[in-house]
Length: 363
Image (cartoon, rainbow, N blue to C red; front, side, top):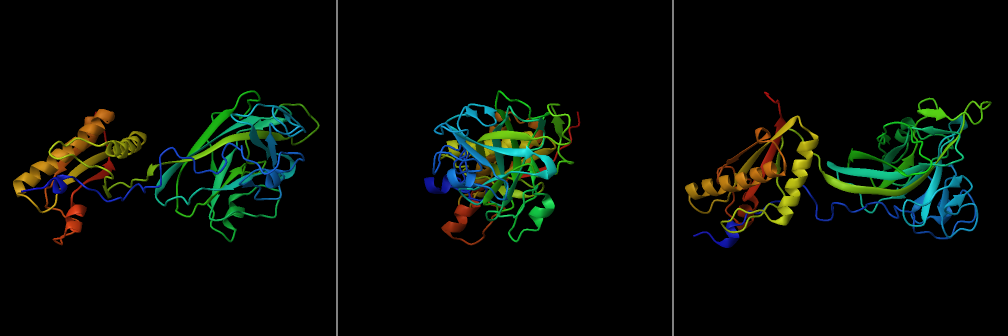
């Protein structure tokens, strides 16, 4: 007779590591609230802001409401702007003559996991005293903090030439110029981690020639103007794994109560991640397969595996996945991952898997 323990579907922690919590900000001091000293002098990011520093010779500024100087909030030497939230933010040039650039960098709370997706977002506002606006803002990641002896842009060539591992720069989303001087604009991007990213760098990685820039005509005699931006609310959060087509994955946290075939909360969270990925990739469909261990009759295991695969399929459909993009099948104990007759092997074999393949809508 099967026991309760043997009838609970167990899964390998293959996709989502326990410490990778959805919604957790992986950026230290992303709101720039923590500081070492209240700002007094300009070019003070390295000295005053907690965790943040400049990776180049560019002189980035830190502003805080506590300051009674021109580095205060809301009034400062570049205009007027309240913090997005809290009492602090940073300011930097994204465009300036002779390709002068300023950047900010910060160590992450943990190294990003290879093959997993992350969302990076921030809020920015164009300073009132800027000559023009840009539509170029990006991010790069590195294994260790950068220290580059330059005041110019960190091009992809410069990033690739460093002695430490770096990614190429990635541009934030844009529907036009970042030209709002009153409100905060939110920009975001998604990345698939390579597995070494421990440090984040933000700024404009393009030259003046490659930057989308519009001058407001304040100084017609100047060939190149200045674009200075306030930055606040930097967030990097975990999204989920990167799923490769035609590759089998074990679903994480999908456990069933005895003979009930109902999903637990953690299982629903894992399936929501799969659903979100399929929603963003309408060219993919998914095949769900249920598996059991070697205990019990073949007939019983076939039914049990089929019911559990159907439960997963129905939940994805309930989330909104069209029926024609999902199929399921139970294999009983016919496809074990481990054929040894141990409890560890049986636990490994009691699972639900899925495979994503290309989808063509016949309609």
